[in-house]
Length: 222
Image (cartoon, rainbow, N blue to C red; front, side):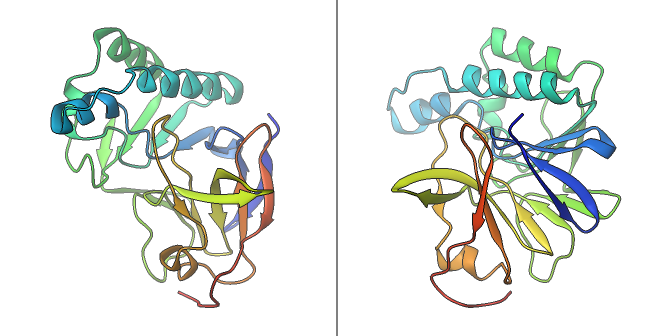
């Protein structure tokens, strides 16, 4: 899988090249910020037409990760849909695809700022979830320990190329956005810099998950 193995709060985790997080001991695959239906939401709100393929590209990536890891438990860390209406407006084929992926699996939807309420889908809908030493929530909280979150869509540059990236220190992990049409926030942004103590790493996505020291623009601790 070309994954990077690391530990958080005693949990042995794998950062996948796709931007997914796998916890082998729990058979748990975690993804964040799918933003399914973004093209539909942009067309509805702004009148701009984007190629309507991002949902399929994202679901294909998710299906591949589920097959590779054989995960029986899925946690989606919020902003799974670009808004609640986008969730209801999924193409019938895409909705059926998602339903097939969910079938027979323990599936948890964490609330995000784009989808802050229950969806008309199966699975469990929670504000946050605690599994062993880890807490899964959408947005990082100050002073957290063993926290896994998303929301910021972090990106990091290497050799002039920007890639979505995991950010991690001894206390917390922020996942990159998993969705195909998502933008990102530079890992040197002050908001992200303030959340991480040294030593911290960025794990870049791509052909393989590549860990590098977290670039520092400032030296602050949360």
